Image 1: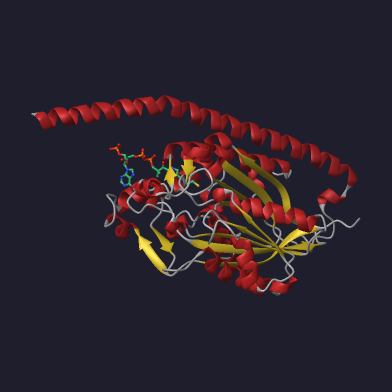
Image 2: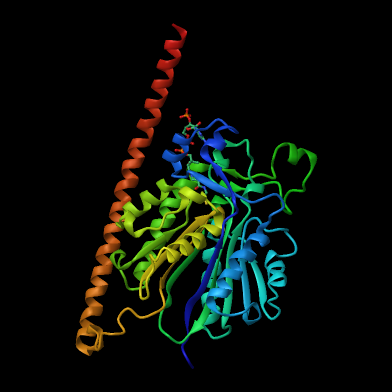
Length: 400
Ligand code: COA
């Protein structure tokens, strides 16, 4: 049976025109640019125009991706749309997208996996093309989070933005594409990031509307803690399973939620910021659109070259997480007549050396993670105690 590989043939992105800056937000809620930048790294985000919904944004990114891949919508076998903010709960937004693209022969599915949705979609697409079932799969991550945000809640409204990103995953006979993957969910954290008032568990009533239960709620600290751990573990797992170490990763593309989450995770992983794609300063957290938006910008900026190994990772509501290592198509080594690994004896030797290198790196990451968790466990009560003392001193001064 022929062996197939996955290959990203085209990509596209869309960000709505309207820019909402931190200063704009400071006129809406009690916040300021300095706080938002220092706590999140976000400077501005895009907001969909009145009446502009998730499928409208998806169309733009999908058309670009199709054009770049040099195929038409009728060539698509499957459309996967990842979104937590679809146009309707029913019908699936993927079918609206299929209709508007004119992708008549494509199957269509919508994935709800929070901010990890695109990773779930990408991994699913790769399975379908690698097993030979499909030739071309469109994967879109798109969100109109601005409609799900409580614009009076400063805990959440500073974080999120709207946008869409798309890729065409195609069947290839040339080695490359997805090298390893992990998908997961820690359902026990289901209520850490939740839109409680929409769904079969809770009918929409005047009471739920008055309590704003149709808007997003978040336990920021719980999500932060989960995110740093999930990112570190997931990247370590996929890099190891691809037979690589972090030094072999040319570019890490993480979910763009918070610069502090990214910084903590990459410190633990031992990868410097120069090899990490960050664009959250301009888009904020666009949930399922975040990884494809970052991937598209990295490609357009020439930060990914043929033969590069890139790691993609996301986490989000659920609490879900997902990552993969993707070898970019094209051949970095095509001019090398004989590779070191082509020699049978050195092949075995280099396999052992690689295994030892990988084990050493994995142990190092685990040790670093444990050390920083222990430091955190000591510092947090001290910090809370100091804050209490400061507050009491302040109260005492005020009373004088
Ligand atoms: N502007 C100004 N001050 C704010 C604020 C805002 N938008 N939000 C909270 N504060 C204040 C708090 O009231 C608190 O004040 P106090 O010290 O006087 O009590 C102080 O800032 C610190 O608040 P805290 O909630 O401890 O901030 P934090 O450092 O945990 O940062 C988040 C908050 C939300 C930025 C952070 O928890 C986070 O990013 N979590 C992950 C969220 C995420 O990524 N979600 C999506 C995942 S897909």
